[in-house]
Image (cartoon, rainbow, N blue to C red; front, side, top):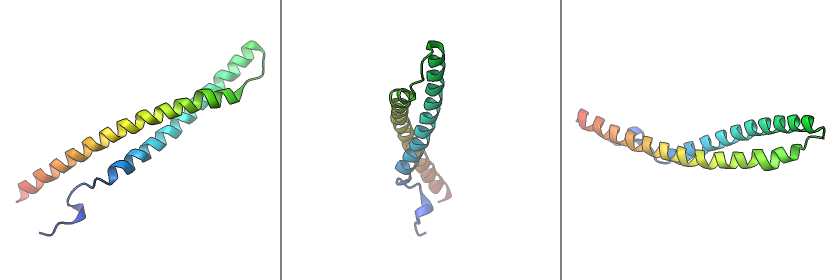
Length: 100
């Protein structure tokens, strides 16, 4: 039987899926951190009776939080994708042996 590309999992999908998930989770964490830090800045400004410093919320809270989250998500998604790739590869070999 001729071997086709769909006979087994492709390793090229590992970094593509890992970087896609990293991008999505980084953007999501940036948005949530920015929302919470803006709300915190507004509440702090109301308590101290000053103008809220929203650039501080962006530069010193939301951006570093998003970078840290992105790094963690990249490592975890690469580990999970490599583990899934190995599992699918072994299952495909077992299936091929079983049908032979």
